[in-house]
Length: 386
Image (cartoon, rainbow, N blue to C red):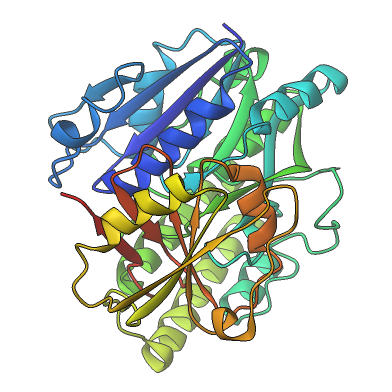
């Protein structure tokens, strides 16, 4: 088995539906298995997903053991030469896995690999590559100057060694897995990717940021978005990381812990000043549905008809060999990209070139839902048949 794809789900069945459809297509030319651990979702994930994906191995936890523990549950069952830890709120290109495996083959000292990520609006996600937590980087991040924390000195579109990879897409070689033994389960949420990245380098291998493929990560959809929740768990994870790896570094450790506490207070103060509502985004009365053929557009229309707030549906069939171009009116409205004749790869590429005034949604071939999440401070958009 070349690749084991491990996904942990918690109450994001529609986003996971789209993720799995893209993953299955990306596995067509390689030998792969897909393992999903569900951390006791209450949104009907089991009855919705299990019948739709008979080739996926689902494991249904009766409680929520945490992100790291659930990944390790699946890791114990995985047989792949490479292991990919993947978030459920992601969409990958059809050639993504082949390119990543090719990079491992060409770079013998690569222990772990992360890729270029954008959010649902096509904006580059800086956490695709990061520095290790430190006094200066942590403080700069807390006050809004995150260039040091996010390794901004490394070019966005060039391959590079990096200190920390994002757990949303983290592929490891079997050798790296054997040396590190996977995630530290003391990290319930956040920080587990920082810890594993650090231990990969401690084991004599390297983490690489691979710019040769891009994925969509609907940032925040797989976790609660309340600011207090995020801050508590994020800075708690940073404290745990410092205790684990910096405790024996003399005076640096108490200074580091004090720095984490100060950074948390600054972040809390900033959040109180800029707190936004987390209500679902609302669709306008008119949307434009873009696809490579009539069949794909009709599929999206069938889902949209159940959304009573939508009054008008515009259809736009495009040449799949040409770049997607939007009119001025479309650029300021909502556009639904229909995957099918259009590939996931071409949609991901098109997303980076559309104006940020456009709200982008996605409808996959075989999906019973339309999804999108253009901003991290809202719960995104879901239109579903059931």
